[in-house]
Every structure is written in structure tokens, then in C-alpha cells.
Length: 438
Image 1 (cartoon, rainbow, N blue to C red):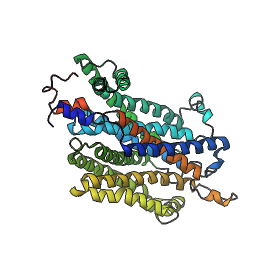
Image 2: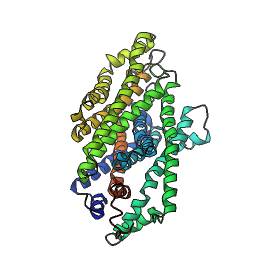
Image 3: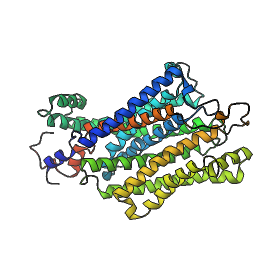
């Protein structure tokens, strides 16, 4: 690193190249197709889905659980790293916060998509019952969205001021937008002290809120007393799974951003090694709770639980079950135990394996249990005995995933994903560049 100007040139947001334009266009097309499918679903009703009296929670709820889990790493993990002053986190925290915000926003939207009557959304607030975990979810998700936004926004203020000055001549409109968002940041001692205090308060708040959100998400299942969900293990099971899904998503996005933006000097192999060790810890913890969730009931479960477990291990859902366990958990754990497995490219592949495995994991948490009720399924159409998402469900779900990636893409385009001011301070460049106005 030669000087501050070099750092600024490396970290200032740039226009999309051809690949970025094609990628963004693809996401928009997927989103438009999904919106059309959703409009048709609202007009015709949930009959266009394959959800019925038994499989009343389908792919939408499993997708919701996935988004909630993935959002966990960007807020809670980053908050912990901020509070412990780990300096290696600097190039990674903003990307993690962007992922968190995008995913938790889409989690809230996915719940509305699952509602047969979205026009009755206000009833969740007007007629809320405190004894219902759904009410807690309705309260905690908007709270988490607000805290995730603030945890991303407050540390951005110095960089937004820098961008305002940088684009003053090149793009007056962008400069004006950055200036409005910068809230008259000047870098005074008072502002810095207030910013640090605010970030610390938000970080302290978001940790219990994040854990509460994951726990409530688990309680939505475990309080129904259904076979497969009736477990006191569910809260810790969901939290450990959220760490795995979140770190996997972070690794994948960090690799792509590093590659596209040429940030090898800022996001180094050291950072991937750290993330790899973190993911190993998360996978080991999650593996332990998986053993508690599936192995122990094999020895103690009643007949109904045995039927459910057999359907997962060797029956109708065995393919998805073992895919999620082996590809999404065991293989990544084995690969990451070796130093070469924690290099950037292997880490990217592992991250994709973890994310895909985590998504299907949520699917097999939701669907098989609903199709194993307390009483046998009798006197209903054969199609009610099974569930696989309809084309409407797939298109809408694909649109929500595309929308999450679109939010990440737009924020990566217009925000400095590696903090400029913080990086310059850590590298001692501000003192040697007094001519640069900050």
C-alpha cells in the first residue's frame, strides 16, 4: 500500500462492467417473472400452490427460515467482532452486514407471500395474541430489520462523507445523494465519540435480539407438539444451523466480490483462513445438535417418531436428507480441517455447498413433519399425501432469492464494501496524507 490515493482508487465504488450488467439484468428478469407468478397467486388463491390441509407450510416457510438463518451472521457475528475489537474483521464486516440486511428484509417479505390474504397483514398486529410465537415473530423481525440497518449505516458515515467529496466533480448527483446520507459528517471528536457509542449500543442490542429471533423461529415449530418438531433441542439447533448458513453465505459473497473488484490486497488468504476456522467451529457445533436431533430419538422414540425418522433416513426424503447432511455439513467440515481447504477457491466451493445444503435442510425440516400427522391421512385425494412445490411456488421462491441477491448487488455497487476510513487508519495512511480532506 503506497498512499491514501491508491487506497481510495481501490475502494471507491465503480460502475458495473459487462458481467455486472448481465448479472443484474438476469436478477431483474427472475424477479419480474416471480412477481407475475405472485400476482396470479393472489388472484386465484393458494390453489395454484401444492399446499393443502396437511402440507400447509411449504417451500415459502422453509425459504423464510433460510433467510432468517442467513441473516444471523451479518448482525450477531459482526456485533461480537466489533465488541471484541478484532482488527482482522475490517474488510469483511460490511459485506456481512449487507447480507444480513438483505436476508432479513426478504424474510419479512416471504412471510407476506405465504399469506393467502396479504390484505389482512394488519390483523397480525391488531389481533395479536401474546401467547402465540407468531406474534413474537411479527414484533422481532421488524426490530431486527431496524437494528441491522443501523449497524450497517452508522459505520458508513465517514465513508459517505469521503464519497461525497470524491464524486463532487465526477457525478454531482451521486455526490449530493452521498452528502444527504452522510448527515453532515465532519469527523470531529464529538461525532466520532457519538458514532462509536451508538455502534456499541446497537451491537449490544442486536446480539440478544438475533438470538431471540432464531429461538422464536424454532419455537414456531416446537410449540406445535408435532412429531419431528416436539423437541427442546430446537432453539439451539436453529441457532447453530444459522451460524453455518450465515458463514457459508458470507464466504461465497466475499469470494465473488474480492474477485470482481480486485480486492486481493485487502481481503487476503488470511481472512479466508479465519473464516474457514470459524466455519469449522460452526459445523462442529451444528453436527452435535444434529446428532441430538436425529440419532438419540432412534433409541427412544415412540412409533410415530420412528416412522418420521425412517422417512428421512431411508424413505421418501432420504435423498434430500443425506444431501443436506453430507454435502451441506460433513464434507465441508472435512475439507476445512485441512489448510489447503481454507484457501479462497476451495472456500468458495465449500461456501456454496453449505448454502445449498442449508436451504434444502430447511425444506426437510418443514415438509416431512407436516406429512406425518398424529392420525393417518385417510379419505382425501392421493395428492394430499405428498408435497412438492408447484411452478408458482418455485418461481416466487426463485424471485425472493434473486431479490436478496439484487439488494446485495446494488449495495455493493454504491457502497465501499471495504471501509475506507477504517482501513486508512489501520494502515497509518491518514497521517501521511494531510493534504487529503476528510
